[in-house]
Length: 252
Image 1 (spheres, helix red, strand yellow):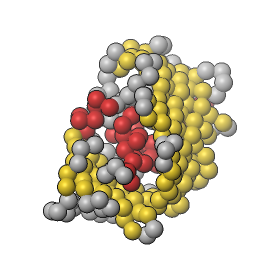
Image 2 (cartoon, helix red, strand yellow):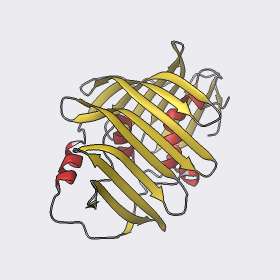
Image 3 (cartoon, one colour):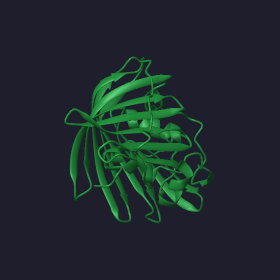
Image 4 (tube, helix red, strand yellow):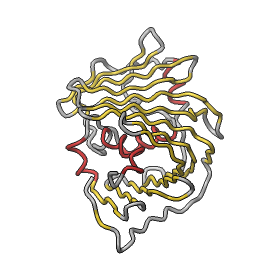
């Protein structure tokens, strides 16, 4: 069992979205329209604004060779940190802490830990999203909203060139609810598709409490299912993360 297995529900996404802070748009395929469409309004309205939040979820991980289910707690300090605890059979198996420039994972099952600069993951990254995009992905919100263009099939889309890589972004709607987002690279460096379901009204917006992440890149196909059980956008929580002195450091 790999040392960071029980943190893989987030790390799998991270392998595709790990160029934090590196988003540099070279060109777009069209100018941004001055007219704001109904779809874009629905899209913008679905972005939760918060200082701190917590949610619990059942997470199912499937990479074709292994299928694991576990419970999780996520805490997010907006623009600052993402914290998560993963439990199996009532015991904490792993803990994760991520900031805009670093990632740490504790594996309690094997007494190991990972401590990496985000830049260390860039060699594995396929599609660059920033830290705020990842926050929205985790809570069932929207991401990559700039320069979107509306097509005639309830889709907002754009094509961009980022670090010489052509990236296609699509957001598919059904009756003002976003049902799918996809980020696909032309050179097959990494594809990410997110499917949204079970929209539930929170204090501010309606969020998809069920999310399915499909992560594809060379040598890796992962499915992650998030079933949100409880969502608190007004919580004030701590983010405890201490690496035991007897734990062995592992590379990712």
